[in-house]
Image (cartoon, rainbow, N blue to C red; front, side):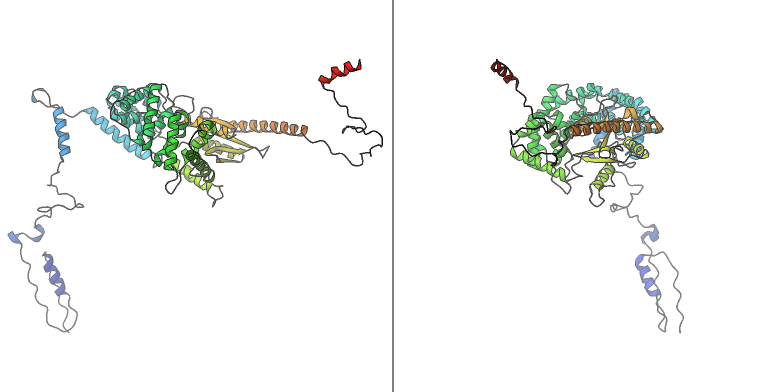
Length: 561
């Protein structure tokens, strides 16, 4: 038996020769002729080894996933060249000299916005606090005079998105807006109004300035607003409750009435109940409800989300009954359909409280409220595991009641709203005590006035026969942990005493209205055969005295004479 021949030495060669060599080198053991010699590899043209062959990038285009070689130049588009030409022309000085485009302020702005966006992406989902945000706020105040309108709006938007609490910062940024407001577009003016509403900055001067220039855009120029932006602006104006310019309000409502046909079903669902109840005119309200009925707003898609429409139907039914009677029949049928669906659906027709912060990496407050409400409305869990909290202050109040041993529930359904806390009266278990938590984000910035949405909620809950006991942020925040316990204990005890007093008064009134005792059979004597006399029920031996009317007394006296 001949031994297996050794494989030839490995050489750097072309792929076709390497495959042939591997095929010839693999021989099964056994007798047979010796293997054929492998031909040597052919040298490449020019004497270069195969490894030094021409690079793949030369002569053919690079693939999309392969990195570009170091010698490949970037291909500028026509738009890039136009921008570079415009920038060079702008920096061209007298006599052909060019001014440098370098500026230290430009680098500071670039670094500031880079840090602000980066930190915002990290902290979104909760209220921003800490020394880093204090440093960014100080930088924004220093650079405010060097920012243009787009940069001012972007900086304000980034700080608002993390609910940074610094009234001086927002006033510093807004103080630079009047320099650019004359050249602002309609989109920029609407964004300014929306930022004021998001931060609850009820500054009449800035709102009137923005609305005055927006009125010119609506009436004169062709700078029209998209339908979605128009609805968002309307909701923001209603949230700010600024109606100091009747001329703007009239033209804005008329403009929206003319464009109501552009609203589809999702946009009709986005109109806030505050705008319908407090800001709309009867003509616009009628056109809007007709459009909702025509598009069957809220009844499209896999989830029937009727949060705003269910609340709007309640407001119209409780406060605009005469207006509802004058609507066409098909609109009335649509509103009745909304009411019946809201009575059945306990998730998609419930108005969620305003979130303390938008959803992000550090928290998802609104998503948590929606999930808790869905768990509460679910029949699988029995509706016992879902606590809906609208703020951290709400959690603190609930924790205090739990520590005091008071049974309560967070987020109890009442029409299209959720009652914050419903506690049991420990002295009168049949009664309930409703606590309304007014957190810091329920007030206008720098004031002690509740937002329009919160006041509408209180008004509607009062219409639904709910007596609310307010826990305000200005009373709660300065207290220590022990003082918070004492505060809630005093409030609970005071309401329990009041309920006990009302229960005693009700019991006394019921006793006065109690029926007379029934007559016993053995106490009733058989009637005499003589004259039948009427007896008193209380005293059976005394006859009934029939009172004489005052009009008959004088006649009896005259007849006696």
